[in-house]
Image 1 (tube, rainbow, N blue to C red):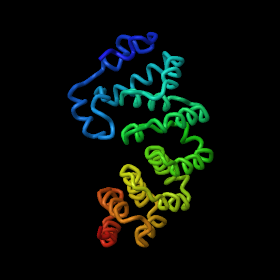
Image 2 (image 1 turned 60 degrees about the vertical axis):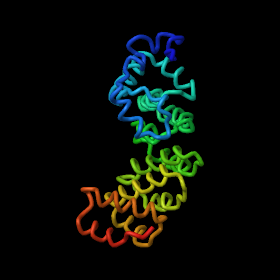
Image 3 (image 1 turned 120 degrees about the vertical axis):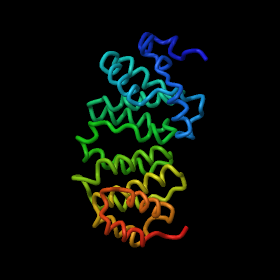
Image 4 (image 1 turned 90 degrees about the vertical axis):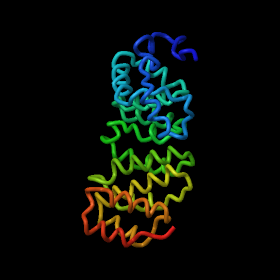
Length: 239
């Protein structure tokens, strides 16, 4: 297979080429973990290597990064990961948001979806909140998952509002990776906002699979007290 960067300008030349960073052992490890990505689209570049590359290219070749980000869709899993890590480097909220909005429809796996959250998002919770609520309503599986992840990351601590639990509990989807993120969200909510969250489990407001998965993940957490874990075990439901 020809190197897809060979005909581009020197933005991805020589040591910057993802092909030069392949690790066959890592490729064999990661490929089964991302079953929605065809094996031929996985090169096998480790995440720390991709993050370091993204930081360097963003610093040295900002215009090249912008050109690359405009060339959607990408073929390789690692190209998508690199794209995600470029977005994280952006310090302007509105620009980072525009990059994210353009990229989300092209995400096709949980690993890329969960890999990035621009630091600038944390600095703008008031503007971010309604956008995240819109994302969780998206028909696109990984946009919805990303929105739930953003709510989990930024709105279960000092910016918590009880209504966020209601919004996520209302998500009724069949996609595995959306349901799993809802379960993860409620497990985190139990650890961080127990009094507001426990009633959602007690009153069975989640569908059965997600309900039980949230309990499982919460019981596995060291941040949940033994007494709460004991109560959660009594709340398990039969499939």
